[in-house]
Image 1: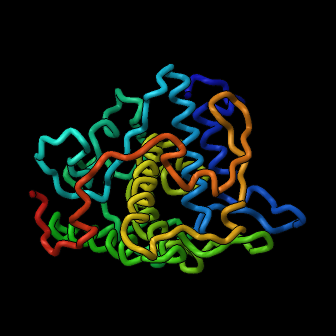
Image 2: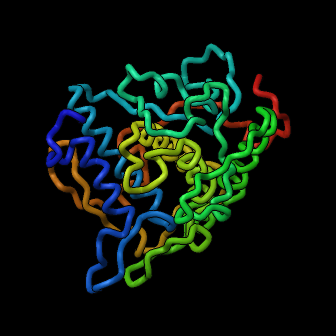
Length: 302
């Protein structure tokens, strides 16, 4: 993808620009002269990124001539490795950055990250309070140096609160953002709890290119990170009767333009990406019981 000319929609650069266009207010709403569009911090966050990751994977499949190729997901929410011997899933902990992302010889390496991403024994922090940081100040986000045990418990707690306790669509997926609405810039207004906490926290924790929406897909870790966001949305549906996607036609019929693996621009509606099985994929099992059931133990061993 890096080898393509910049004007090829399958190029790594153009993939970033697609996200930039939809995620920074670059598009103006129809019939308006000043109302822009942003798929972040509202109910479009999850379905738009699912479309984006889906077609990114399709492009890779075609380039590799391997229709079975799949993006792996970075299970950043998992802090325990289980030695099960079971072939039906991935039971390794993922709260440390995988070596493939820190090895300069790998295509998944990106040097423009904070020092945190290059400390192999530092666990991710999913509990950053974005309300306490002003991106216009020029000051970097500060992450406290918690012990491993403290960080594990904080991560499990924030995952439980933002996913399990967010038991309805508005609290998990986000509140409405319709034609005629102003662009939302404050996460407290309409962002779902998962976008607002673990998602933004991890963008800030990795740092560098991953912080601004203008550049975050230029870091290869963006794609494995958001593949796991997809997995967690799928998991949320299985947690209770209230974990149901919105039924509002303004959400279901919202549509976005995105390039496919054949350089064809597709018009894709939200309602067409809600069932991952119709998209042709499922997720491996993982050991997410530690935060789903919020075990108070801070142990990182089974």
